[in-house]
Amino acid sequence: MKLPRLAVLIAGVAGLVGQLGCSSNHDDTAPDGEPASVGTACDQRPSPQRTEGTLLALRIQPTFEGNPFVFGQPNPLAAGGSLIPLNFRFYISEVELLRGDGTTAAVDLVTEDGTPEAYGVHLFNAEEDDSSTVRVLAPVGEYSGMTFALGIKLACNKQDPANMGDPLSVASQMTWPQTGGFLYLRYEGRLQGGSAGPGASAQSLRAVHMGGDLVNELVPRVTAHGSLAVPESGALEQELTVGMDEIFKGAASDIDVSDASVGFRSTPESVAGERLRRGLPELHVFELMP
Amino acid sequence: MTSARSTIVAATLLSLGGVVGCSGSDAVSDSDPSSLSNSTSPAGFPKGTNRDQAPADNALTENRALLGKRLFYDPLLSRTNDVSCATCHQQAYGFSDPKPVSTGVDGRTGTRNAPSVANAAWGRSFFWDGRARTLEEQAAQPIENPLEMDLSLSDAVARVAAEPSYLDGFQKAYGEAPSEETLPKALASFVRTLVSGNSPYDRHLRGDDSDFGPQRQRGEALFLSEKCECFHCHPGGALSNEGYFNDGSYIAGGDTGRQQVSGRVGDIGKFKVPGLRNIALSAPYMHDGSIPSLEAVIEMYDAGGRGDPTTDPLIKPMSLTSEEKADLLEFLNSFTDPTFIEDPRFAP
Image 1 (cartoon, rainbow over the protein chains, first blue to last red):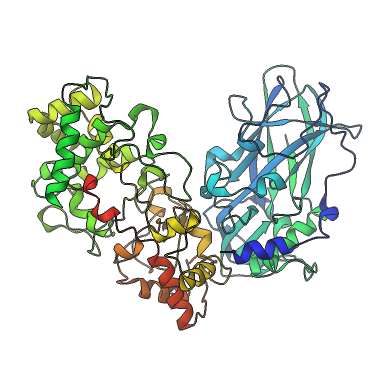
Image 2: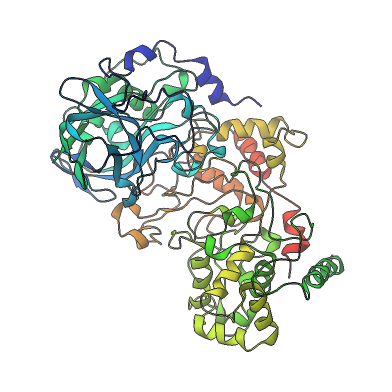
């Protein structure tokens, strides 16, 4: 039986690819001379791009209206009332550190013991504290920020979650219908009284589902600015903030998505997600803090 | 049925006699049809067998599974000697309980419906609130729960240790006397053998639609559609994402579910998403057993839940037609595995 959503997605979102591709100034070459991942495979045990480096641990901290965005608890809204996040998770992959001269250094996402993360992907899940730290093996040096894919590459998105291990299994809660790919970012929350502030909307505060399709490389790249001074030895711990205000603003934008496939227009949350995806180049969601 | 079952069990036990040492190794070969401990994953589950799902410190062996089965059916594990695991997890109902809430010792009742333990080998957390992270951790709790079996684990171990045949079984399975560690491990081992993978839905996923006609196909399409959004919580072969959601069945002032574990306000009314395998066998439904039939479950979701403001934002009125409801119901019926509830390997 042909699954309707699969058909819808395959039918296409052509024409969107070029708008959100990788930034143009990365050198795609790791300092050790090896080429960076070209994203053509989705290996559960990816070959490390680097064999040595300093462990850089980034604690992911969502923020909202200038304060920490506390999962599962009421977060006061400036416009009155409160917002309770019920589900918030997203994928990070294909990380590169930004040098001051505009070149980049591709790095591996690794676990606490330094081995590459499965499929080269990290899943942040606000419900699981263990997922709140993303780690990379970084070469010594000074950096002005990092870029990464906010989602997973097409080669992984095309996989059937039933055949995948974590973090791409069905337990990720990031699957669209079977064989229909993954969500890149998922947010749901409950608005208690009050109303959305400027730039947001009640819908964007309730649910945002951002994802790709099975044909096109739609995963957006984002940049987190901030200084990173990676030492020769030891480890470096910093914070990676996630501006929920920016996410809600992007999801509530009036970006025209009428050219998107039906799959991206079928529910309020998927429309919000597609608007966010298209709007990300103009948003400043992530920031590196000391 | 009983004689056939006895024959198989006896044959299994005979085949173990005199061969099994204290290491927990098995005399039953992997290909032996009477083997409990080496079942292929149901369709849509991670490839492999139920053995792959056992933790390193409790590898699934035939001896452990057989020991666990005996314990599962033994009321010895309750203070009053009249309640066993099988009292609330009955094979005829897909290893669930037909009562809204189960009855424990002295007629005591709890607040939650006993969920099916079919395919629990692939579970990530257990109980409606997910308070147990492993089957081993789960298995000990009903024994000690005052509303269920009301027996301390140490007393349960003492009772088991007083039975010579159990002592022998533990020696064969774990190479040691029963303990507060090995008793739950044995129970968990048996539960990992309860694999259900022979439903029309399994065959459909394998490409055989001989018992998956147009109505079931329409129901599946609805299930996977953004109109119904069932797939968000019930994806994959297990038909569960193993997460916690407030699906609209919560009523203010009732059991708050996951919130009792996490302490988060946002978790009020969230319960673990159950797998839907054999769902037609496991009425009544929801965490509190408050909905008597699958038809009524569909009606509740069609209405967008019971109206509590804590309901998940993805639960919305669906405005299904009567034909669509019938299609969905027929799809849910395709999850029934009739061989599972008659399999003598799982019976006492």
